[in-house]
Image (cartoon, rainbow over all chains, first blue to last red; front, side, top):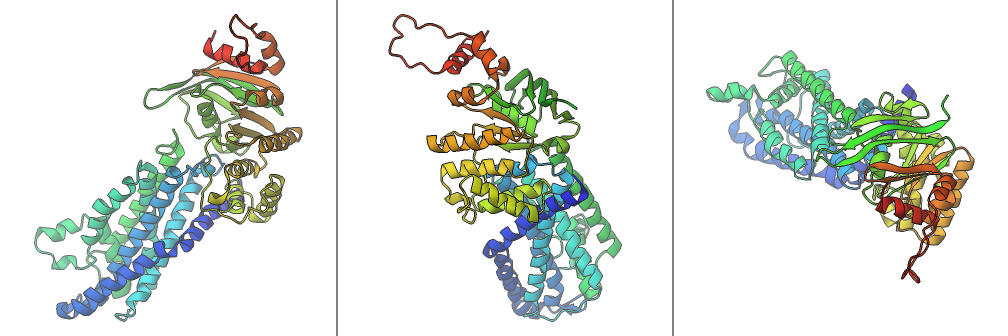
Length: 258
Length: 258
């Protein structure tokens, strides 16, 4: 395949996924709008006034970046894990791509691009919802955009790996429920690591999502519990590792070919 | 430049559970041939096809498609092959036109080229008025035709049909064979697996019979039929059903393999 043909194949994978996610918008976009509105209502309007300020800003403003990342992470992950799993499990239409000359890296990139588009769109939607509850300041637009995209890439890749490996519908639910959700909730969505007592502040720093949320929060508030470059480094490292795993799985056919 | 469309040497496959599907199969399919690969259920036909198309990893042996080593240059090899699988595996939510255009996209064919080509193929296969409805609403025969359309949308030089007429009525089968023999006249090599042995006997120039992972006979149809003359009716056989010549050979070789 020439590079142009690879581009067409990549575009085909992405286009198909984007059309799918818009066709079932009530399943892909609407839940995050409802959930985030409830979070903003509870933690902003109800509890926020009692908590006061965190890192020098109203509590509702503090939790916005974390809640945006919560939605971005779960949606980017769910998109690729579900699309891959359903393509290989329900009717085996993944074979349409596997029999084609599309190289593994194009397949991985195409699926991940779909996850990134959904993650970024969800991020923008949740940010828009937050404006009904608080005003937002942006310290660095570059950092905001970079973390939004990089986080979507990392978790779309992780979801793809999960989708390739999953052997049943439980296989794509176990990781989000028992791994991803705890990591996100314990990663500082609702609190600053400085506020945690004793060892918990240290334990939190072993959670990769902690760096995601702090980096993204820095883009809005200009404050972070850890250096920005460290957050970038952790995300970039995870992106490389997960891309390598996804590429290897599809190249060798583990989980896909017999 | 080889005059073989497909050359298989000592191909072996043992599945993870220990099931041995192929025991060193060797096969040669001339370019432009209509080749019948016959065998009872579980003989290894679909495994062999899976290895040629990249859906199954082989344990040992080599596969060469138009002189291209399928293991060394899988993408180049796959670009020349079209597959019509045994199981219906089209996405039920997608429309036939989209399925064909997307499939073309995976082969690097732009939408500008793919859309008119897809419409023409749908017309040729009698599906022109079904292009815009979800494929789940198509009848069984229509889905079979759609799978053929998907297998040829990228104009492959080698078309592999794995039981394409299973469950298809007589009239439709005839029109499908007319269409497919038309492709061989244009130079397309066809490999067919089927349990309708009368069809294979009439259509195929060469035939190979596989049983329990071994090729038990191969050659031109005339050679194979001449090599195994029909056994005369025995005492008490009067009134029993007797199939065509190939069916008799097939039963002789697969029930009492030499």
